[in-house]
Image 1: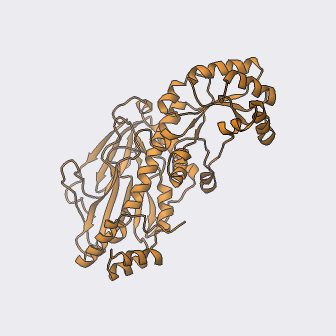
Image 2: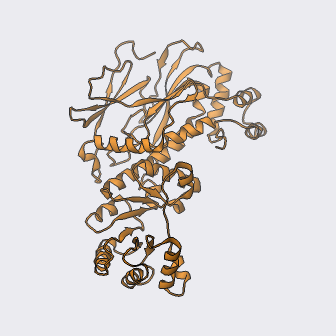
Image 3: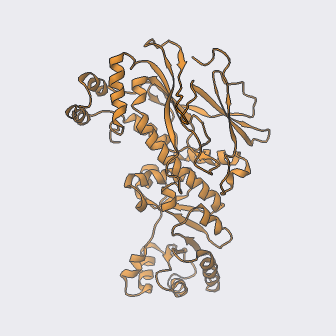
Length: 440
């Protein structure tokens, strides 16, 4: 992976320089990532991008070229440049498991290290989590609306080329079955799919010629695009060319709810009873839900998915919540908090658990400071260690994150699956720490 040191904002590094001059750069500090609220009307959020952060952390270095740029730009002094040259994160990181759901105030990532080591990670951490979690939240709503029918990520041409790879990964965590993006297939072993666009049909002198060429190349189990000209004529031609073993036909335009029924009836009359119908074209969770009664077998989603379906970021912030009063690594942590209007923070290093009833249904997101209460057998602790003393210990297969999301979604009340605007599926409860337990 390319070194990631300069994937940051300038003020992260100028803060380090100023803290070095004031003698506070080495103070033990705790930063937390959380959202003050869910996007308007959303009932839950989805944590995604954790694995990418761990990869980026391992590559977080400042190369000679980086340092030369910073020096020639006059951004930093020699002492700070020397510190960056040797930068290696040596602290601890805890976080919600990737694929888990979150709510307002959930401390989805907790970074504990020196101030200098931790503050330079802010922009990188937020850029990954805000993007990937927004895509995953949209994907989760779409797979919920699909009710078990496969969903294919097809948004590469609607976002930045590398954001497309990250979006495919996030969508897969939240239940999508495949992607059209080959780099995502290579990097993350996500199943890939794709056949032909309208240009391929238009290239040929006749639609039949295009279908013949595609089937000869890809086999009868391919998916033929049937709405370039006349859909009924294209379906008949497709079955004539491929036979009843034709894999699927794809509809990319028109009133797909009506067209899907007409195409299904026609396929059945032609004996292609096992041929599937795939629908694409400006889909989102609402249009997918509207097709629930139509004979659609799979959905391909692009623009709405990779842009978070109206909410392209999660509003995550990275805030200092505790720090020691000296450079002594054993000095106790003191809670710190902002009092800014509408941007207040809650000081102190947090713990979090999901309170569940006897049937395992989530009732509340419980966040506290100090000692975590004794587990009563129903509650689920949410933070897991991802980095210990600078060593990444939280790598996991992407399949684990995918399974975690399915479990977390199943744990929520049924109201969480509603697409209509509403309040969070469960409330966030803050437990005040006992006296003198707001430091450690």
